[in-house]
Image 1 (cartoon, one colour):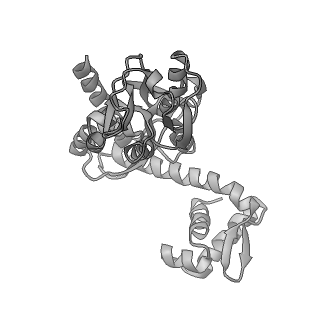
Image 2 (cartoon, rainbow, N blue to C red):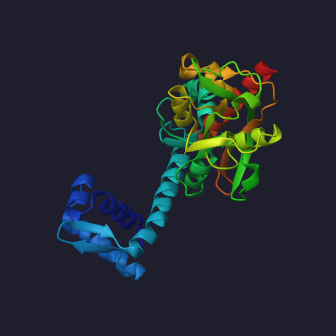
Image 3 (tube, helix red, strand yellow):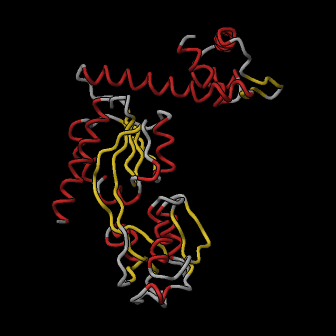
Length: 302
């Protein structure tokens, strides 16, 4: 199996036909057809359902797809690593980051990174642990900065501790209960939860339980903190959100902190990477700048 055959498989999968894939990649249609046939012969299985309107991966092709994507990602990283070790400043870094880390750490970290690697392309995915770590394990990301999920430690990943982010009860600025002093006053409020159990937003269940109030009223779960914040800003819902989203950034004009007296949790934010795969020099430089910015933040907050 040759890498070019894998590239051709992915091109046809993306474009839906040999004709479209050949045109997009600058190849001839016969050459791409021959490449795909050799790949299928090597694997001993057909990878596509062929029909009048084009081609789409069959069950074998769908199973092969993530392996093909992984090969391409790792090949790109290997090339980037070698070129950067030669002193070249080109390549790509793909990373994921949660909203709070993006607000607190990303601007200065990226600015300093650009002083070292001005030409490297950065690609960023937003999300939490449950959405970013699968992409990291599959090789689609170099690293991910997100809340640490102690309940689901993954031996395939290693983590560098960055910062602790305190949670607060957030409400829209004109919410009738925005000045509530206790969770008891909020027992009938509908909450939005950002992420599944184990993620920061879901801590509202423990907060209610610790206050002796039973389960909170929850009508919506979101995949990200920004989605939850947008819902809170435009309804009577509340949510547990990182302080940073309210005290800094674009949401400070729309949300305010409800000053409840009960202690609220904080959560750790870490930088995750695959245990068995070293970062490219450019990715390591960006990760180092995030660590440095986290140190500045901790020292300033202490």
